[in-house]
Image (cartoon, rainbow, N blue to C red; front, side, top):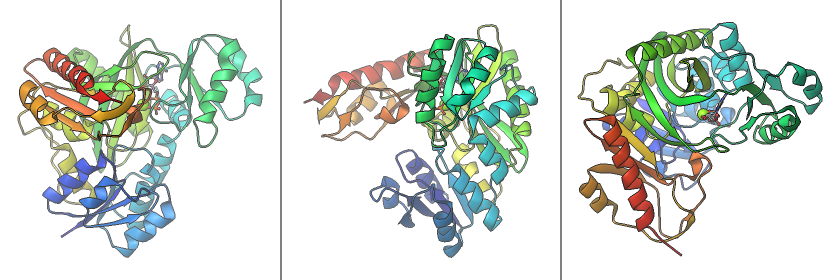
Length: 397
Ligand SMILES: Nc1ncnc2c1ncn2[C@@H]1O[C@H](COP(=O)(O)OP(=O)(O)O)[C@@H](O)[C@H]1O
Ligand SMILES: [Mg+2]
């Protein structure tokens, strides 16, 4: 029996743990949170911070794991890569993982490789650089932390007088106090999930995305099919392939956020060298494409044979994040009844007594509604309607 080490044992990682157990693997889970829900399902676990490369590597070596994975979080991508490299397990090489962690480095690499249509970007690690940079900046720009996640610290800047303030905001959201200013793209947002299997690139799915309104840029849902023409999808796939080659991604899951300009231009705005969050890996890709994504991602991690072709049935699918009205939960509706009545799946982590925050980043989400239908628009509408119903049925203090 092979052993998989999973870095992170939160709500979204539980889907990976469950799948790996179903496939007959032993699963070991690390998480800094002693109450991580994934611990209950694991064969073995330890309370270790998943950004601590040394401590996680020591645990992996002691337990002689056969594979290492992280999913739906950027925090442990470097740790995953480090363990894979040190222990000669399948995984993304450390150099590529490190570069992908820095949005400014990624932008520079993609710009040099002409992987997409995004113009020149600036990396800022000190406010002293601003006077030299400003004359070269074409507004509007998007200012973001170089190593941010969950859309924190990102803002649009329309004029030079707001540049420094946005820069301070972005740096405050960056562990390394660095910001990147890139051309602001007017357009619609899409997600692309890929898996590189020992150098062989599989573009698994292109998803349309629902986002909050500015000034927040948080995800509200995903759907397949994308609604784009085959020609547009082909062009996106070609950009994604070029990007993966330029970034020298040799192995593993890659989740990208893209903006498609009103004129069809392709802009890769964000890359994570791990399976996407927000039920992308566990629900959206398998239901929408028929590819057993998580099963093959797990098999690839432990060096077992993979098959990334579409076999199962697939159908239009849409998710809506439970981005709910703030308040303290006094009573919850009967989710089973709602699931049956509206023929949806609800995956949530709400409890009586929980505080629901105003929805600014996907960390403020309380779960998801998943709907399938013959037509993707109908799936999207039903998921949205059920989300609204849940919001109205929750009793707040
Ligand atoms: N250049 C851009 N132009 C317009 N909007 C952008 C740009 N870059 C990012 N965004 C928006 O901000 C969101 C967060 O940026 P992203 O780079 O994905 O950061 P994070 O790592 O926090 O998810 C994106 O999903 C997108 O909606
Ligand atoms: Mg993003």
